[in-house]
Image (cartoon, rainbow, N blue to C red; front, side, top):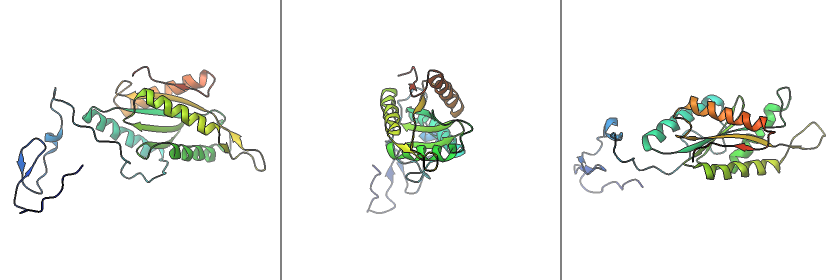
Length: 210
């Protein structure tokens, strides 16, 4: 919780978290915020909605990848953890004329089902979900619930036709066990997604790291 602003004389020095006095308005240099080698990890802030991400927003690929990179840097600094999931609808093929519309509808539904602190984006090979401060066992429960909920929704089909039932294949990786960068995490998540597809779809293939 942020410290209350002092009501006393503004010339009175404030205290840094490490007990060192400082003057109001004087910021600690970035180097002072970084953990020293071998020092205990900095206390991890609780997940909160990402800055610049509107509630209910589905991000484009560039923005999602940028936030993934920022989160990897933040988690490295705080020695935190998170899970990246790649989801692909099984019933949407490359020649499906409704693919883009359905992909957006599915992504929007996923936004409704995850926390405000989590991040959802459209990627070239499916839908990315960033589950912050989430371990693999909890992430598996989340993705299995997403599969179940999406499977119970009837999405728009052909004009005057019945609604479409959609199942999901999911590849799941964790930070830092599966990688420390946006590129390595996405690469391994895609490999697990393809494994789920090759195994018949409608399943989650998850990380081996706890």
